[in-house]
Amino acid sequence: MRLVFLGMPGVGKGTQAKQLSHELHILQVSTGDMLRAAISKGEANGKEAKSCVESGRLVPDELVIRIVKARLLEEDMKNGFILDGFPRTDAQADALSQMGESGQLDRVLSFEMDEEMLVSRLSGRRTCSKCEEIYHQIHRAPKQEMICDLCGGALIQRKDDHSDTVLERLRVYKKETMPLIAYYESRGLLSHIDANGTFDAVSQRVMAVVGANLRK
Ligand code: AMP
Image 1: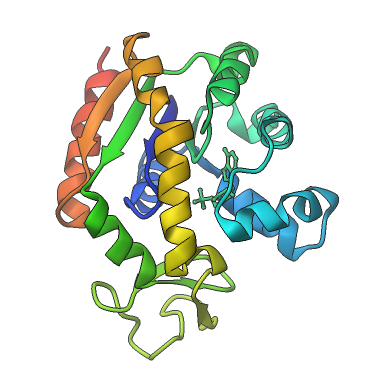
Image 2 (image 1 turned 180 degrees about the vertical axis):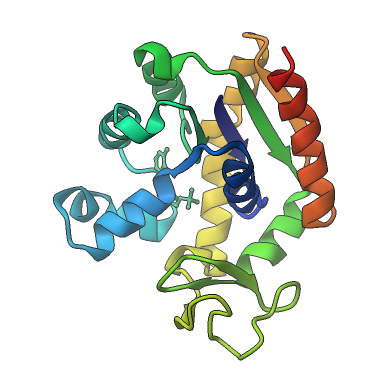
């Protein structure tokens, strides 16, 4: 199964992608995680992407397309994948559609939520510096303050989760990525997911859409 998850930052699509990838035995491909890993390892791709990622702008299409293309060709992608955070522009969507079998998508899920709620979710978000598990100061506090429940790593606030950068990321999403909703709708691939409510409630909506696709 080849899926794309679209949605504004903070909408919870990464956490849903993680859960669904376990259930379907496929891998989650998060371009944000890949770029952050490249930055922290000091790789060339990371050096190129650093200032864009930290300020909430999109990194150049050419760079993201190159890393996704290489990743989707790897052996462990044979059963399918969930693309989380890619494509984000028309050019990326066109490039994906030209990636042979990898570009033949089964479904695109658009996670949707009120913007005010997103800003509050993002600015309270804390991320484990070691395993990237996501917490929230109010809605999902760790047992020990600023320590990851899973691996004991230190929790940090990602630079791009600071409130001014959050607003920039939302602006960029509306301008560059929202048009992809119509792009995939016109190809008959889009399902809207109401991302309000608890994790389990949203997860059930996701399963209803994906389950219907599995039965096809
Ligand atoms: P995310 O974790 O998906 O919110 O991504 C964090 C940041 O990585 C974004 O704000 C962008 O700077 C960069 N990024 C991730 N995916 C893409 C993409 N598909 N195209 C361009 N930039 C991206």
